[in-house]
Length: 358
Ligand code: GLY
Image (cartoon, rainbow, N blue to C red; front, side, top):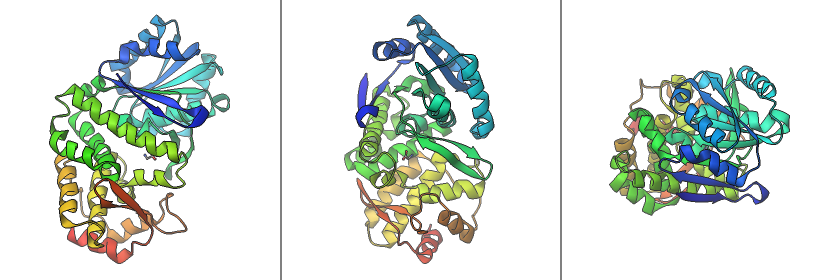
């Protein structure tokens, strides 16, 4: 069992990672916390696989468990669905000595975290992510949100969980495409913070699904890097921005093609290669570094754009990103393997040139 601490003073918490830990979750919680009731929020896909096991584990440890199932998919991340869940929480008589558990991927984690952040002005939250993407990214760091029709993740909070429990064995039920999209974020950590981890991924990424110890290591190293960054900058005023490498272009591609056409991690994979190319064109990285990033990303996350996007529209979408500063598009560009910088001076011409070559 691996344990990582995310240090944020009184709001510090542990991230526990192991292969096959799901059935122990009740005892893990019971040992550390005094909650009496736990409402498990899960989706229609994950529910039939794992909700019964997790609820049984909680009950065996003497906790009262309630399961609330939402339809799988991004459209559940809405205020209307949130209202239903607040009412369910009231029906179960959840109080401030209760907790919400998010059992699922990014949609469940964001929505359940949002409920926990706002029900009774905030009750405890446990993240139990069941996709690789959620295990290495969205379950850690406290970003919670719902969507409005016209804008994704626009109503939300930074609200840290009290505990994150990651069982790598649940990934065996994940379709290959979804496993690979999660690898995009894993590779991202190597590029932004750890050249040694990047090298390790070059050698081992192709067999992660075959080796549980390697998979636990990849998840652990990713969470360690993310926890280190978030501990320094919880609300993304500075260094946390580096976690957005690949996301400036990635988000724009997701928007232009419509959510769901490309998976989030696939869009980020394309974004990482594109943004590395901008760094190459600027002379920030050399050709060898660019080719290593491109080779790693393309072999781990095979994806092609469904069609050639309208470039002006893409730039327009990037310029509306909520992460921009003083109306300037923010790019995170690799400077060498293991280090990135924040750039706000990338011109439209450079973006277009990177597209032309790509
Ligand atoms: N997904 C990037 C972050 O949590 O900051």
